[in-house]
Length: 471
Ligand SMILES: [Zn+2]
Image 1 (cartoon, rainbow, N blue to C red):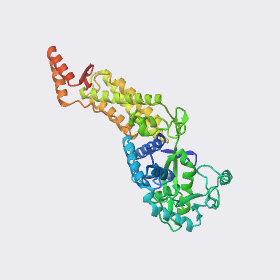
Image 2: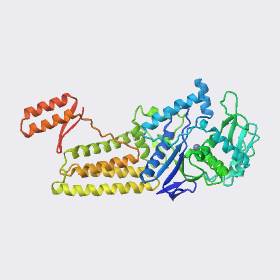
Image 3: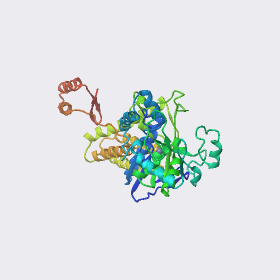
Image 4: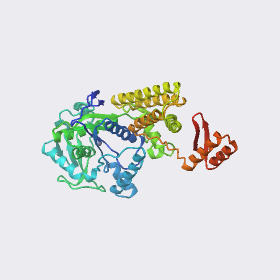
């Protein structure tokens, strides 16, 4: 498998530090609100990565944090007249509500920043002891000039950062370098605080991820994921802290997903095109949001509009209808193919199944190309739609096609609803109707038909036999 590594700016062959095991960390949400469409993209992308790695036989150790203390948390908690802890509790529940319905699997650990204060303090102490960090009047800062290679992920030069930051220094006058960032912020009036040897306060944002990675996964991990907006300064600072403290390489592969545009414009609160997932599911199914998100390559920007969502909905329906037809026809299909046409169609479908699976793996192996993976599934849908028009294809090959489609969709975290939910007594009536027709008792057949329809089902006679669906 090859992964595009932000740090080297190229696709690299994926090799884990420990054979067969992938240690993976993804920056999670700040839990002060419902998560928005831009947050949903990394959660879905890296959940898909995890599922695919597992499909390829890796054991994946997956950690995603909750940032439950920062300026936004404090401001909202004060506004709502509740504690920061209670605010976090509420929106962690809301995160799970949406994430579960988007079929985002829970991580092996979801640590909260405020539950990791001792771990965070340990790391800050190490950084101070090694002379990478220092206390000022308002907090403890990381000295970026001490870390060789600062800027290597985001391709920034320290001199440029220093020059660029020269006029925004207010209140942080005793920092050694303009680009130095806070590891610990001393308590201000009305803010929650924890004890530390340097003064009561709270952690800076970047340090929580470095501390959690170390506590849950170790000094070096295989994959670190997040949105493109986190490359600088967040991930650059994570590297600096972790490599300075641990004296080991921090991350082997950095993955970053692209932005979401709304009707070709950047999503932002000020332009009024800011959507939470909770808003969107009033109009679209969670599944359609996931399907839509995977229809583009994760590194590319994705454009979101009502038309594109509608197209995604139609695309998804084509897959579901195909699966429904495969299931329905396989119910009455012969155990072995009958007739020459069926034999040819069956051989072709079998070949197309093998080709679809091969294509799916090939493109997913190439930096998780879910867009082309969906194209491979649609190729199979087309083959299956042609095949089901041929009578006499055997049950086994029809089922095998449906199973493969379900398997490939499952790797993308997409689940097709196939249960038609036709109750047993309706199927029995259907059987009696077929018997009656066979015996040319059309009056009885019609009576049974009416009875089935009076129970809110529709009968459609097809070349493969009668098909029953809910009204
Ligand atoms: Zn992070």
